[in-house]
Structure formats: C-alpha cells, structure tokens
Image 1 (cartoon, rainbow, N blue to C red):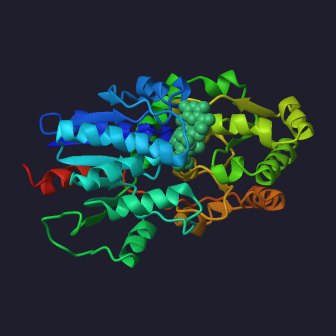
Image 2 (tube, rainbow, N blue to C red; image 1 turned 45 degrees about the vertical axis):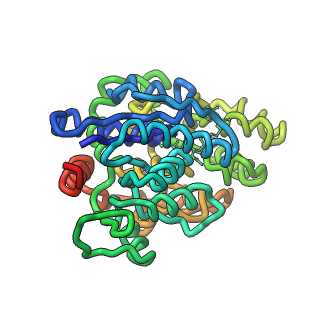
Image 3 (tube, helix red, strand yellow; image 1 turned 60 degrees about the vertical axis):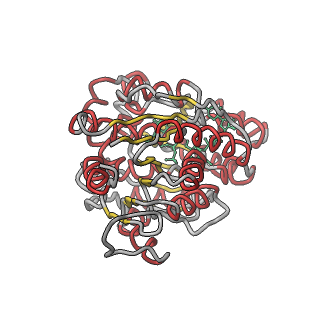
Length: 381
Ligand code: UD1
Ligand code: UDP
C-alpha cells in the first residue's frame, strides 16, 4: 500500500511522527509512505527541529509555499499536491487536522479521485469565522476514511449525516467513520520519558524549584485583534506577580505583539522578569515544560490536549473548544481573551486542583489501528 502524507504546519509534522513510527516498526514491508511538506511552516524551529528530534523521515518533496493569504497559500499548495498525486498514484492521501495544508490536500485529492484518510476528523467549534472550521468541514466531507479521536467528534459526524454502520467498499460517497484514540496521545506517551532524558530546558531556565504557568498564544482571533491580545497579556502580567510564566512565542504572535500592543504594555511585558519569553521550543522541550508546569494556558488545540494528557489544568483562551471533553471533566476552563475570566479560572484551579483525568484519548496505539484499517480497506491490494 502506498500512502502520500501531507504535512505543513508544526502540529502536523509532530502528528506525522506517530504514523511514520508505526509504519517503520510494524508495517515496513507492507506500506510505503511518501511525505510531502507543503512548506507552510518553514523556520527551523517550526519545522526542521521536529524532523531532527522525532525521527520523522525526511520529506520526499517540499513545495516551499511559505506564508501568504489563505487563497494564495491554499492555491499554491493545491497545484503542487495535485501534480505529485498524479505522479505518485497513491492508494490513499493522509491528511491531518484542519490547516490550509489539510484543505489543499483535500481539494487536490478529491477532484482526481484519490481516496482521503482524515486523521482528527469530526472536530467542530461551530464557529465558521475560524479558518480551521472551514478546512475541517471540507476535508471531512471529501474523505473516504475518517478517524475521529473523541466521542464529540463521532457525534458531530453522525449529525452531519455520515453513515455509521455501513459496509465496504468505502468511497467518498460511502465513507467509513472510525472512533479511535488520538494520535497526539500516542506521541505524548512515547516521548514523555525521552523528553526527560534528552532535554535540559527545566534546569536551563531554572524552573525546577519554583512553580510556573506554561502559556502559548497563536490563534489569529487572538493575535490579530489588538484588544484581545492586550487582554491576554494584561492577564499574564497580573499572573506573573503570583507565579512565573513561560511563553514560547509562535512567530505570528512575536510579529503581532509589536504592532497590536501599545508601547506601555510592550515595555511591561519585555521588562517583566517573571515572564520568560522564548522562541518556539522543540517538541521534547514542550513535553518537558507541560509535564513540569503547574497549569497550562493556551489557545492551541494540541497544547490543550497535551495539558490533559499530562494531568494539568488548562485555561483555554478561546470562547469555545473542539475538545469538549476536557472542559466537561472540569479539567479545563474556557476563559476566552477576557482578563477577569482568566484570573477567575486561575483562582479556581488554585483552590480546586483537578485530580481525575479519565482516559478519553485511547490507549496510545491509535496509529497502528489506523494503519490496520487502511490495509483492510485498500481496494487496490
Ligand atoms: C497555522 C494553522 C493553524 C495552526 C497553526 C499551528 C491555518 C489556516 N492555520 O496557523 O490552524 O493552529 O498553523 O501552529 O492553516 N510564520 C513565520 N515562520 C514560519 C511560519 C509562519 O514567520 O515558519 C509567520 C508568518 O508571518 C505567517 C504567520 O506566521 O504569515 C502565520 O503562519 P500561517 O501558517 O499562515 O498560520 P499560523 O498562524 O501558523
Ligand atoms: N509545540 C512545540 N513547540 C512550541 C509550541 C508548541 O513543539 O513552542 C507543539 C505542541 O506540543 C503541540 C503542537 O506543537 O504538539 C501544537 O501546535 P500549535 O499550538 O502550533 O497548533 P494547534 O495544535 O493549535 O493547531
């Protein structure tokens, strides 16, 4: 079986590590994987670092699309992916999540009848002002095999009319939905101890003795709106009076701090010794930070979940989340970009540190399950 895997943005490169590892360890004689990097993320610390650290095979192709508006970026990727699909003639194209790289892969493949495998299917924010919501809906509705990591994802697909008890052969018109674990959980389990051995970020930053909050911010709805970005940073400054804050900055955020925050706020942030601003960190460093943090504050989809995997309370800097379960179990609070709600959530978790994190993301072997299903349903075998 031949797979073409599309990656482009940081979280996709990380997710792809789990599938490539499972192919290498269990299916090397049955599955050939051709990796296509769209070039959506290109800085070394947003891309190359993950290949070096997570033993992901070097991409067979890089489309080098870089940054651009949604339309331009997606069009460049679609053109490049289409040409490669025609050349490679894979049995399936594998798409992760909800980025513009996902959307481009879905459009290119569906139109020339290459069956799509969507990993992380069914997630919905019910907020179509998010570019990701458009991307994931299009991708799901063009897919042949849909792997949903959560019950909420399964329910969303049911509601949108996907059949649940259908028999093969599976096609774009008779798609198959599987509820399985989360491929990101596979990675977190796999790399947790490796991260402890191979990184020294906790010692290097002097974080071993004093508690700290780990924060990430990159969602366009936060970075691109000055009042929202300001509210988040005002809350971080308040929090830093009680607890250290570690904030690896996405390049988008680094750029927009300078244009969207007033000079006074910028000065306060850059001079605050209790806020450690870092360039994007590697995945192993991120895992170490997540394991040692007291609490995680984020607008990232992946980081929300990783906080849960490592049994840390989360403050979600968004009005809604696709990962309903982590809020429903009481382990994360939706605080939006609202200074007082962020402070209330912090106080809540200080008074009531969560203790129960039910296993809702599978058993750490989602990748193997997905590959088994692809092998079973591959009609060209
Ligand atoms: C993208 C995804 C988002 C995902 C995030 C993961 C879309 C629509 N959004 O958002 O769903 O959560 O990746 O991190 O696909 N930049 C650099 N260097 C890089 C990459 C980006 O400087 O290596 C800067 C550029 O100024 C660029 C901006 O970041 O314009 C945004 O990058 P882009 O890939 O368009 O979107 P993200 O915000 O990263
Ligand atoms: N991550 C990382 N370094 C960082 C920030 C995040 O390795 O400096 C990892 C994080 O552990 C998770 C993934 O990147 O696995 C999440 O990506 P991101 O927050 O960029 O996007 P999202 O998940 O929101 O799409």
